[in-house]
Each structure stands twice: as C-alpha cells, then as structure tokens.
Amino acid sequence: MFWFLLLASIVLAVLVGLAFGVIGHIWRLLRVALTLARYDVLLPSEYYDRYPVGLQATHTLLSVLAKRRRNRTVGARLAQALERLGPAYVKVGQFLATRPDMIGVTVAQELGRLKDRLPPFSRTAALDTINAELGATEQLFGAISEAVGAASIAQVHQAIIPRRGVVAIKVLRPRIEKKMAREMAALRFLAQGIEFFSVRSRRLEPVQFIDTVAAATERELDLRLEAGAAAEFREVAVKDGYLTVPEIDWSRSAKRVMTLDWIDGIALTDAKALDRAGADRSQLAIAVTRGFLAAALDYGFFHADMHEGNLLYGKDGKLWVVDFGIMGRIGHKERRYLAEILYGFLRRDYRRVAEVHQEAGYVPERFTVDEFAQALRAIGEPIFGKTADGISMSRLLLQLFDVTHMFGMHLRPELVLLQKTMVQVEGVARGLDPQHDMWTASRPIVERWVQRELGPEAVTKRAVDEAALGFQALRRLPQALIAIEAAARKVSAEAPREERKWFEMPAVWIALLGGAVLALLLTGGDRQRPPQSAQPEIVQPLEREPVNRRPSNATNADATVNDPTPPGAHEHTPDSDAEKAAPSP
View 1 (tube, rainbow, N blue to C red):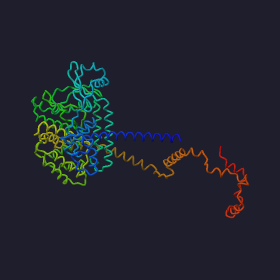
View 2: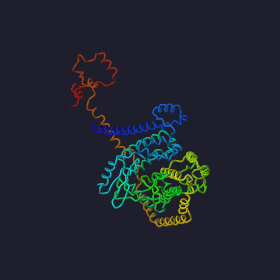
View 3: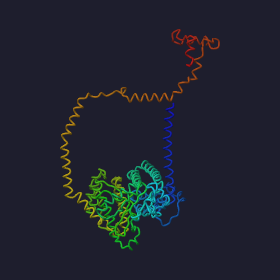
View 4: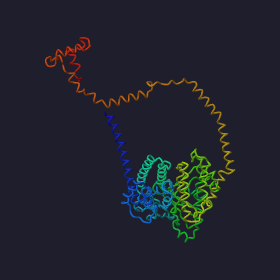
C-alpha cells in the first residue's frame, strides 16, 4: 500500500506541474491576445469583410477594447503592440518580417521597420552586473556613463580605460534570461496548438520557426558567444574589406558583460547626417549588399541582424558593423544551392534553377523540372534588369509564395536567418540609394563563387579529390573483405538460435509478477477482513438449537427426495463446523 501511495503521489505531482505549466502558458497568451486586441491587430478592422459571421461578431466585441489609432496601418500597429509586449515579442516580430507567407507581404514589409529599442534600465543595475561579472569596476574602467542605447536584450554604456581611450560596454538586462525562457515556452505551446488543430499550417512549420527564434535568442543571451562571433566575423570581414568589425577586449568581457572598441560614427538611420559628412550613399549600399553576400557565400558565416541601427559610417570612411548577438551559418550544400539560384536568375536560366531546387530536395518528386521552371520564369522575368525602385516587391513575394504553396515546398529551417538578413539588406540598400540594383551589385560576388566552386578548375580539383578517396577505399578493401569473411565464419560456426516460446520469455514472467505484486498492493487490505455477509451462515450451529433452527419434516422430506447426494454427505459434527466457521486469529 505504501508503494502504491508513493507512485500515486509522483503521478499527481507530475500532472499538477504540467497543469500549472499549461496554465502559465495560457495566462501569458491571454495577455498577448489582450494587447493585440487593444492595438486592433488580433482581428484587424481592415479585413472585416473577409471574416465569417462568427469572427465578425468577435471583432465587434473586441472593438470595445481597441484604441482609436487613425492613419496607422496594420503593420505599424503590430510593431507597436510587439514593442509593448516586451523583448521576446520584439525578436519574434523581427523574424516575422521575413515570413510574408504567414502574415502577408504588406504587413511583413512594415514589420521590417520594427526597431529593437526599449527604455534603458538604471546605471546602478548595470554597475551591479559589471561588478558581479568582472570584479571591482574602479580597477577596470576610469568612468562609466549612463546608457547611450538600449535594446530588448541589453544596453550599451560608454566607458574610459586609462592609457587606451573610449570603449563600449554591453550589459544584459536584469533577469532577462528567465523572462525570455517563459515567453518562448508560451509561444512554442501556441505553435504546437496551431500545428495540431490546423493541417494547412504545417507547411509553414510554426514550431520550427519558434525553435529557430528561441535558439538564436538563447545564443544572444550569452555575451561570451557574441564576443567569439565578433572575433570570427572580424577575420572574415577583413579579407574582402566591405565591412569593418571592432576589436573585442577579452579581459573585460564575461557572460553578461562585453567590452569592445567604441566606434565614432553615424548610424545609417540618419540620412541627413550622412549627407553632411559627405558619404557616398550609393557606394555604401553596394558595400552592404556585397559584404553580406561575400560572408555568406565564401565563408558560410554572416551577420544576421544587419538593420540600419547596427551599421555605422565611421569618420575614417569605413562601414562598421556592430551587435553580433544574432549570427547565421549555412553549410556548403546550402551555399551552392543559393549561389546557383542567384546565378541562374542572373543568366535567366530558369531550368537550371528548377534543377537545383529538385536536387536539393526542396520540390516534391511528383512535380517535373519543366513545371517548376515555368513558374520561376513568371517570377524572374518581371524583375530582370530593373532597379529597386522599379520592382514591385509585393507582387514578387506574392508570386513566390504562391508558387511554393502550389508546389508543396516547406520552409527550410537552416535558411530562416538567411531570408531574414536578405530582407534587411535589401531594405537598407534601398534606403541608402533608391536606384540601387541588387542584381548588379551581387553579380561579382556570385560569379566569383560560381567560378571557384563550379568552374573547370573546381571540377578538376573535385575529380582529383574524389579519385584520391577512391584509391584510399581500394587500399582498405582487402581488410574489409577479411573482416566480412571472419564475420561470416563466426555466424556459420554458431548454433542456430532457437526461438523461445511465450512461457520461456523472461519479459512475460516479469510482467506477470509485476501484475501480481500490483494486485496484492491494491487488494492487500481487503483480504485481512472476512466478508460480513457470509458470517451468519457459517457460524450458525444447526445442531445446537434444535427447537428454533431445525427445519420442518416436510422440508426435510423434500430435500431428501430432490437431493441426489448420497446419505451421510451432509452430516457434519458440531465441532468440525465450529472450527471451520471460526475466523483465524
């Protein structure tokens, strides 16, 4: 009985824990829904005519909570709501800007302007974090200023190091790790529910989308990883020279604090200041596009948060990039896929682009290459040879996602960050130079990669490498044959294994014993008490009370006639009856 109660207590504790976890998720999601309703983005008024009657009635009820916000679009209102909800939802909003298949093209474009800006926390809290991570602040820094910039995850302070100069200190927000974990768990719970109840949503991979955002955010919460990424990207950027990366001060960096060079420059968000400084905005747009593509294609490692606030035009005329919390990696297979697609669009070779999609496994086998090439031609031809201001990005993206839906293509999780950054880079380049032609700017980088990886020299080198691997396999062939022969001899020498019958299997007897023990635990208390209903018949001595208990002669006669039992079978001594009826002590 004790073990049964212990097992029941454990099961109950697990169920209560799960229940409270689910309740916590539901409570947070209700807060999110209420905030979205207040900003009129849960069921936007702009789409009222498309709703069925039930949703129209729901929208009418929610309109009581909504605030009046005239001349604001759905995307602008959604950006405000996400900023109000906090850091986790700002990150989700930045990733949603890359998913027009989820939220629509227009909303995605407007959400791309979402800025990661939040009110700063106190300087005292920042000093406490620095002291806890690095030790005495006075011995490391001469002075630390108030916050000069605050984002959803961390904020930046300016500091002075004796005999070195000005540096930047990045400090995480207090208790940000727990807050992000709770919100991401609630969002994943929501995504699982969407996938479970909506079969059509599974093509969009909402759970994998949230997992990608959560993984990127978790890495961003460890500033040691960001420092390592900055140091690695500095080595990558210096090889081409399109982007410049500040140097990390490792002796003044830890998990929640990072110190790096202070960059005295102008953010690309300030167009007037760029003009006053004499910056060539057209060249800056080209540097942004080529810097991203060179890092992604040549090295498979790129900055995945290249919005205007993280790009600075320095006084030295260089384009500096900061904030390395979100970095992306793609393997050689994905790089080849990306380069061949871009190269195919540049040459208008849509059949080759379709073949690359099929070779990569992105298109189901039930569709032919010619069918997919025809659909890609409808996408590529309208944008060929046009500058950014002459391209309808809404029409292009709508066609692209209509085609992917038509051909049953699923989101590739390893390309989410790449898609996000490509959207950001296109927006930054267009903001700098409305006449910027992304195809012309990217052509040298793509052609260089294709020539190196797919040209005659690359094919020859790959053939030599494959031949070398083949010779190595041939050299190992005798040892492999000997091992196979030894294994075959061992199998043939061993007696064939007899199949056990069910009553010879240990698992069967273990299960039976376990069931018996469980039955004993459940019924152990009841066996110790004799059944009360049977006791009067057993303990009643018929021979000792002849007057009151003996049945009538007629009854005995009937019993004698009808009972086929031989005479004497019903005869019992009073002593033996009493012994059998008495309960055991």
